[in-house]
Image 1 (cartoon, rainbow, N blue to C red):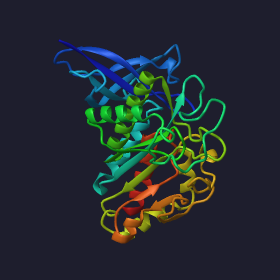
Image 2 (cartoon, rainbow, N blue to C red):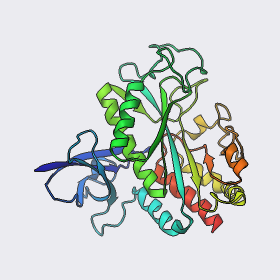
Image 3 (cartoon, rainbow, N blue to C red):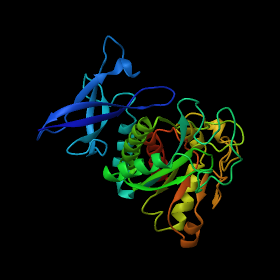
Length: 337
C-alpha cells in the first residue's frame, strides 16, 4: 500500500523566505529519504547547476490527507558535499542548540497573521475600499461585527493538534481580520520546525477558504496595529533566578546587539516598530515589567515570582523562526554561560 509524503523546505525568496512543498509517493514500509528539487525556481541555484538536496529532519502526520500520509520537514543542502545550503537557516539554529543545550533553552512563538480577501486584497472585515470602526472591540472579540475568519482559525487549530504540533493557543488580534496562534514551549529547533509546519497548514486552510494569509509586518498603513511574532524565551537559569532574567535583558541591549537582532527579525521593521501600537521604536532599546511599549517585556507574574521568561516583542510576523531562535539562543545563552 502506497502513502504520500509532503516534503517541506524553506526557499531563497527575498526579502522574505517562503515555504515550499511537493509530494513523494512511498511504498508501504519505506522511510522518507533524501530527495531534491529545482533550486533555479526557488532563488537557490542557477539553471546550469540547479539541483538542491532535501534532507528530512522532522516527520509528523499529515492531518489534511490523513491515513498513513506524512509531512516531512527538510533542511536544504548542496549536492557537492551535502553541506548546508547558504539559505539553510535551520543549520545555524541547530548549531546554537548544540552549543547551549546544557542551558535548556525554551521558546514560545506568537505568530500573528492577517487574512486577506483574494478579490479585494483587503483584510477580512474591511469593507471594499473602506474601513471598519477603529481598533478596540476586535481583540479577543466575539460577534459577527467584530470577528471574521474564525472558521479558518478553528480548522487550522484542529490540523495542528492532529499533526502533533505544540500549538498552545489562538486569539483574535487588535486589527480586524488579524489573528494569532502560539507554538511552544519547545527548544530552539523544535519550536521553529513546528511553526514552519503550522504556517504551511495555515496556508493550506486559506486555499480551501479562498483566503490569502499575509505575514506582512504592516498590512494596513495608518492607525492599525502591525503583525509580529512575539518571542518568549527562557533558559533553565531564568526559570529559577531573577538575576538571570535581568542579565538576559541586559545582554539583549549590549552595544551592537539590537542592530544585529533587528537585521534578522524580518522585513518591515521600521514600518511596524514606530513607538506606537504597542511597540518600541526600532532605533531604541528598552525593557520593562508589563510594558508592551518596550523592546523586551518582563511579564508581571515573572517579577512577582522572581523567575520565568522574557518576551522579545520586536520580531515581525514574517521573520524566519530559525533566525530568531538562533539569535536569542546565542546572545542570551552566551551571556549566561
